[in-house]
Amino acid sequence: MLNQTYPFALPDLPYANDALAPVLTAETLSFHYGKHFQTYITNLNKALEPHTDLHALTLGQLLDGSHPLPESARTAILNNGGGAYNHDVYFKGLAPAPRGPEGKLLALIEEAYGSLDAFKEAFAAACLAVFGSGWAVLVLNAEGKLQIVPLKNQETVLPMGVKPLLTVDVWEHAYYLQYQNLRARYVQSLWDILGFPVIT
Image (cartoon, rainbow, N blue to C red; front, top):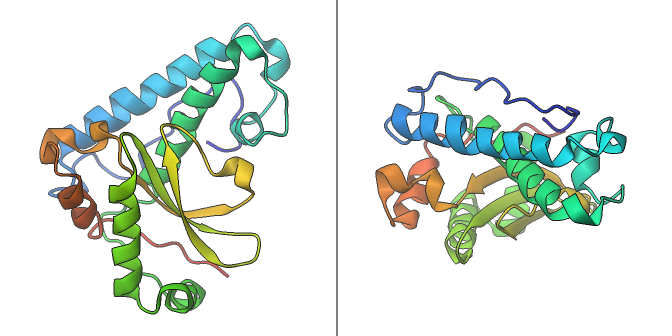
């Protein structure tokens, strides 16, 4: 969605609704993707509709701080645009048959955390440390180093000038149908469907 412009549309889910079961059931995925993700997009379009001067901007340009937003719509654009962007990155990072980190990414993980297991512990801790609703994102920063960034609500990493590599949604709507209040169990289960990107 990063390069889409108004009117924004829900992208196609890159796998079947039941492809991530049992970690995320078809019901959970359908509710999260088809209801919550869609709602952010719908509300983003509503916020942008009267502001025709913003229609040519991509989602990335709306969120990265490079263009001024009208004060009357700023909060709605950032909240709903952030929700749309974060969900897009999250769902694209899930896979029925995920790939573990390899090559340069694995080397960076071992350099930063000592081992893959230690990284998983640090990343899970960041997911659990987010108070209330938000996200945990593994990014590659401007210095070429890995960093785990916790985000509140619908903040994004776009203004930070970093590249997101792995994103976990820790809003309750992402897991409550299956895991109720057990965020730690949800996060642990995600390792079976989180796909690590290849970086060069």
